Image (cartoon, rainbow, N blue to C red; front, side, top):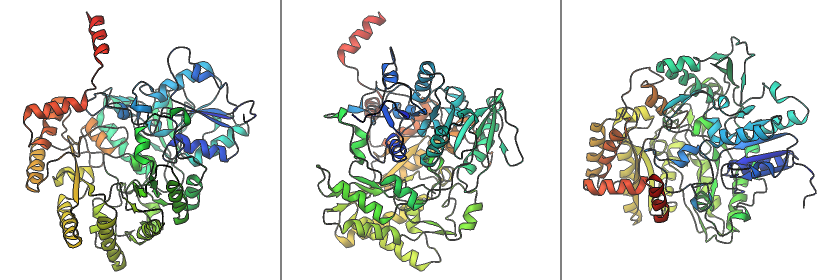
Length: 590
């Protein structure tokens, strides 16, 4: 239909294809299309049998790209208890059988076998956060860079609009992929590297296998450099080669981010999924993302590792254009489900003295204290809310993203910023909450919270008092719902008993809870695996076995008897087999 006799680039995705700016494969496809390339996307190819899905579009002129999905495939598939999740949120009807474990590796091996001379480029969360030696919770072992397992040529880490365009341009100009080693935000494997004085040479993968403290020491450099404006190249010896991680691009400008979001997305799943439900799409179909990046630096979170800590905001005009697109959707009833971002209330925030930010190594701008250089003024964000709410098609815009209440409680020297924080707090509670406001104190123990890089639980008390007062004044009956984590490194059963006691006294019967899941490239995961805090190298005790983790989790549910607790746990973490499937399995076993 298009009159094409060949494709320039073919992208393989582990997710169902949704042409929406929240789905990575769609963004990269649209970015490359806008640059004039002929692009195809193959979502969730069948990796069994004759590999027909990998062959049906033939050989691309430039390269294959692999995006395993919006989540790490193992987090997407399994719970913290290593049980199969109830559904795959990024697959039609939540099906579990449409992607393999580690699709980055599986897809790469198939493509290399079929087309040995075509460049393969890796991107997405899975490759991005496994770019260096990392602990794999599901295999319970330290693994080398994913480039050592996936026969690909290069990784683009983080948000990939800039590096993918530069790489496509260079390959299109005839350069050999094996010689392109200078593009920022890329990772490659080479035996021909001589470290320079400007490089940071990490402990080798083999050294980290022998000594967990070496892995902990490495991680401090990895996190600092991924969050710096002007970073250094990282090198890690693995076998006879070096894994080289080039510094990231500077944060995108507002104009560049607008250009990415303003591409002609249809904002709907592909027609092949007609009549099928894609759970992740249902969550975001009527939401709008207004900025990129997060300077919270929470120990268990990968957002800053992937997007960086510096905030890039979309312009008001770009945001309003997308909101108007949402209002034109057939099923839109006037309610915007989320007007947010990685953290809802960081829009427009940055350092007052940007020169200081360019030299800063802190992974978090707000922990252990809010940086005095940070401008915490919520005025620009309020301006966005007012502009969106003024649209005649909008009945109400909700804030579904996480709100950092420590930013709202902070008293800076700037009185204008303090007044804006008070105004934002009242407006949030009175106009943008659908009966329940969810926040994430995560724990009650200040010692555990320090390891999590979260504020003291006293701040939750203070915010709850403000929340309750504003509800009384406005005649509202809304709830403040806290999120908590059990089994985080440093957390003991005594800490969980304290959490249960304090929340019980506050009248909570907790439901919004989770067991800590170690995911690649977070501080918490390094503490879990190595037993050390990467920044102090002090020992950290952690619940690791299933029995220890379950014992901590049970403190959340003090109001249920033991039998009820274990029944709920099994229901949540075990997928029920169809009876005929179970009978067949039992026959085979016999």
